[in-house]
Image 1: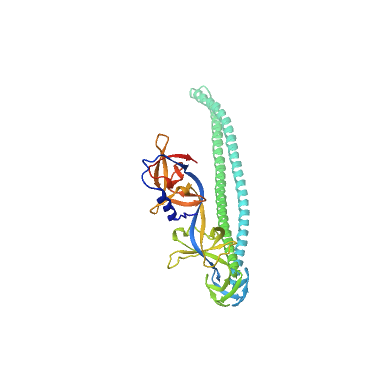
Image 2 (image 1 turned 90 degrees about the vertical axis):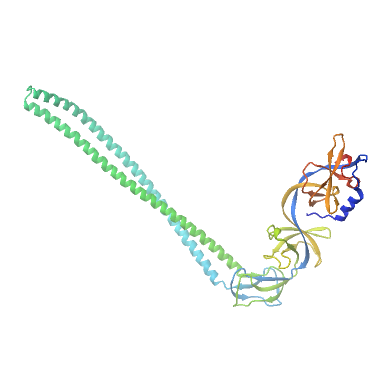
Length: 441
């Protein structure tokens, strides 16, 4: 709760007990406490007045053509009773379209998921086939390498024989027939080695081209999967948008029915069936017997209050529960404050009576001191802090305080620090810079 002090009472405390410096007085004995930090509820405090919430203007939250008005001036209505209804043909069409879009998007998502599963299966098979071809390539290379190694051994032996035959032939030690036989054997094994190497190169090239083709196809299949996933993302976005559209259309359908929120009597039927209304334009006016407390909230506190917030109404020294039920969108032209309505619970207050309203806005922590420790002089609030003089006594130090929330018999001192020793009782019996003995509480 906000500070509530009668300045005159605090002034009286000061005038009856504070005179002189206290330099020559014997030490007085006073009660003292240390400043404590404690949690407290921060509240906004306003003065309001009770009035009857006599007239409620009921309007549609959306524009449209009025299809039917179900009440007439003077009719008695009850809370929840249908007052009027808009033409809902366009809204129903929007609901139908949204449902159809949801159905199509869901079917599309199912189809795309099936396609992706099939594409991923094909992709996996292609990967397996590529791995198999690479294994086959290794087998081909190993087979040819083994064959070539074998031919190479024969080639080396036959070449050695041929080289020797060449020397013998050149030296006329062997006949031409023997030389030609050795040359034929060498030419044959050389051709065989050449052919084996060419065959290996051709077969390996063919197998590599096959693998390259398969890997290109694999990349195309990967691209197809990514494209399908992108289409799936788009389909899921379309589904989400269709659901949002359906939710909004269903809300519009609900808002197309105007129902009374109070018990009362129809004072005015502003619009008739067939007329086009704008959002917020009154259609039916109803007088109710509900009681509200009106307060004017400054712009600095406006954003701190929301509809539904709890409130406390102080009336005849009693506190009643209430809640914020209406907040004006624009400030009053004259006062520049925003009208806020508080609806009390189980509280009967005479109309026009001024009451105090507290609206809790959060929890905080601060230093609280006894109210009895505060005195006022020339509209300034003070306390006596105590400083030890080194001889077992204390001296008073008059200290200005900024006061805030009241919590029972204690009050928030915004500029004091926790642990400070202050006089809690008997401030009227001491003065500034006076030596005192204490009974610390």
